[in-house]
Length: 310
Length: 66
Image 1: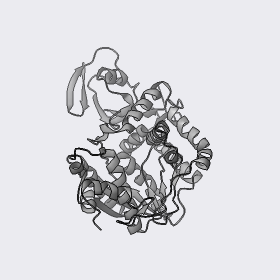
Image 2: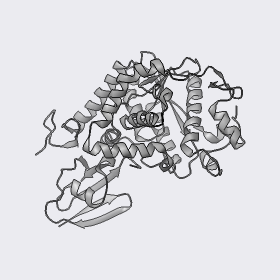
Image 3: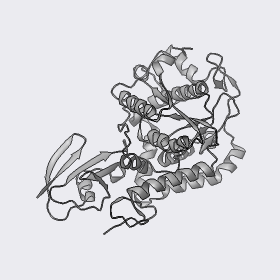
């Protein structure tokens, strides 16, 4: 009979192919917490007194990020707040928003729900009705980042925490490499900073945790999470790359770790020759940091015949 | 001998014939084990866990689109 490699408990919840470990629920939860704490310490993601804003969708990754950071909040190491973005995706987003609200209320932290419609006078479903749109994920990414940066300043947050996991990060590394986008590649990592004081540093505490283990953590801990697929996700190049990596992982269970570790080793060399492109000025329309006269959000909105609602 | 399977809209009684594990069930349903967590009688189990007569197996999809 299989037992927990650490404590001998016969109630095993995971068999880790990458390490050969079997773990019971308690040892599994402890191992995840320990691994995330190691990432936070090694990458210097959090300083005492930080106010961390979690980008909380209500999905497993952001809820687990909030749950783990809550242990720092309870020990008064950091202050915690959250933002939830409602992109206006009918039949998908409402449940996540409700779950996010419940978690924030339960922890007693500041929480804002910000809608695309309120900021841009158009939501994602409406954008997707345009014939020559640029693809759902392109708008979603740019508009969400715009809201997250702005809300972080409204909260006076010193860090923005996102739920990016090992699968997301290895996908991003491979995508940027495959697209030859080396300047974007060099910007990836556990901590993203910018020269512009209008950008709040972003941290990814779950960067070394596989997506499946984050789902397992949520279920084993009984955390309420929104488990559903974004109806627009199938349109993305990210999903194509993700599928390739998942297939490779079946025979090579450590492949995502090696992509991440390999990237971390070459990152300093890449940055030297291809530094991330920092925004030098401000957008003339909305005032957000931008390399051009108009930021990407305002450029997209102009194409759609809309503008930022300030 | 039989057991119950719950997965999304599926809620069915299946016949238990011989030694069957969670892995066998997932393969039979064409579900990638990398995208789900399985509960056997309310407790999370690994794919090697053997299904017994009268069990309730709940399959929870945690990763979408893969």
